[in-house]
Amino acid sequence: MARTALAGSLWDRLMGLISRRGLDVSEGLWIKPCYAIHTWGMRFPLDAVFLDSTQRIVGVLPRVKPWRICRTFSGARSVLELSPGRAEELGLGVGDQLEFRKHLE
Picture (cartoon, rainbow, N blue to C red):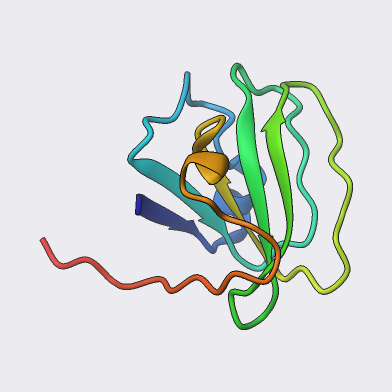
C-alpha cells in the first residue's frame, strides 16, 4: 500500500505534515494516538483515514484542504494521512481492516 511513518511522540503528532510540501502516493503518516486532526499550516490537501484501536476504518475524509478543522469519528484512536485521492484509489472504506508492518531496510 504505502510506506507509512509513525508519528507517535507528542512532538511528531503536533507537527504532523506541517513542514512538508506534499506527500508522494507511496507515502503516509500514521498519527497514533489521535482522534482528531486539523490542517492549519498545511500547504497541500490530504486524505484522512480514521482508525479504531484495531486499525479498522471508522471514517474517511477525502481531499481535506489546508486550513481546516476536521470532524471526528466515534471510536477513532488513530489517523492515517495519505496523499489526496489515495484512499479512493486504494478502495479504502468504513469497516475495512488495515494492517501495519514494520519494514526492514
